[in-house]
Length: 456
Image (tube, rainbow, N blue to C red; front, side):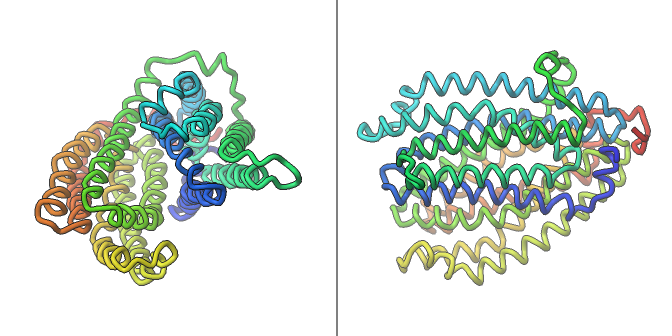
């Protein structure tokens, strides 16, 4: 079966549910890692914190090639240009491998300076240095894996990418248990054990993904081919990827600034935000998964020149996404007190979280609205407009409103989160106006040269 028919033969649900599980496992594994290392000591958790932040920033950097290549691949497949799509896979892997190697070497040899820059307490620096230097070894395979997984999803093989994530997480968690708790007589390696199991899991993942690329796409990657870069292909990848990465980076920096506002409210409000955000992540997953699934489908449609179908595909996905999000938010609101009770019994934290859960009835539909429409615009090649609007809204609306309501007017943590509500709805409605204007039709990256249902 051709790659085009793989996507065309699947419904939004068939494409999306593996994406949801894939994303959920990434979030859940990070939480389980922290939970397992907390049984060793809280100092060990603190030592991991800097290394994990560096890892997260690296993922954001690597993702710009993965996001860009995925959109370019879907459009070439939709246009029937499968040979060019395969070249995009090769060059994306090669380009991201070079970035991964540079970042890995930078972290490996600059780890002492990084820890000092991040104000790591002196008594934790030895432990933090060990973790950071070992974790640097998995940055190269992680950079390659992100492109391989994005390529599989672009071809419609979302379940295969999910299976790899399942196996990687199982290997990592098993490695944690063996090396943290000293099962079967193995040494108890503390943070070094967590780092080693992470590296092993990533190496297993990249091997499995390379095998799947060969089995499903019939593409055996050779480094010589991966490093023969085409200026046109790299330019198209960066045209989509750089604005997407910039938007994600802006969101992370915005979150840091707003968290600094929350810190002015005291440690209990910081803890409340941390607990609430972890629960909110799982509501966000529905919107993110539907957004990614819709992005894949629309990329194929615009590549095939079926712009009207792409236009209505977004409208259907948005309706589904909003219904699913509203239902999931109601479940979270009703179960919120029980969920928070797993973390704390503090009356002030529980009461404040209760107000935040009510606010999420407004916030989360707006966030889903935003995520799905932005993903669809990006799939067409219209990536710069969402990025510019993100900068304007996050820094011109979210942060000022958060400070005004939360700090200046004294509404507390709920007031701070009002900034997020206004930002998400302003951006979401603006993105929807952009979609309805159909200006994205002029941003399509690939012109169709062969029938989309061409046999291969």
